[in-house]
Length: 114
Length: 113
Image (cartoon, rainbow over all chains, first blue to last red; front, side, top):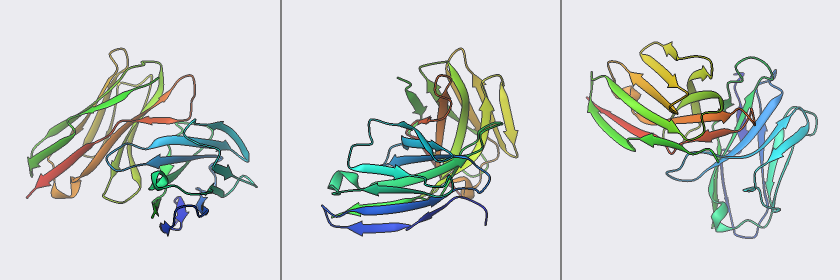
């Protein structure tokens, strides 16, 4: 399967713990995006990378959140000191630099903070 | 700030009906518009992408149109089937950013046999 993959698919954690999610984009895509989706809402943009450079961060991305894409391939999203309000689906997408720039999404990581 | 609105929020139709989902956006300076499908608890599947210079795109039973000047797009689904039941999301990329998708809240569609 050459689609976008995300791990883990589900994560349950206690408030105050740190969590890390991983995204593997489609191999030839050099743009990678993170979104967050809460129940009944559309996804909201968090951040995006072009290769290894993080070019934009939404104000939704508080200082407890950090994202990396160390070699321009996979990406990680870490949340420190989780809060109940962080419970959401975290979606990763990738797209090529040229052409239509269609964004292809992964299955998401469902985070539940108790 | 780009605002994307989808109407109706929910729709229930009997199998075989043709239906239209609506999407409107407040800033007409867009790079492209995408329609997605989302099944419960799942990720998003891209259905159609319309560039700002295009008026419509078709894929099978789906047809999406774009009227950029009025800030509107419609997704037409012909001969609906129970397997079409899902949430349909509309999203636009602004011209001045070129990357971040701005989503509506979606239309939840139920097609009954």
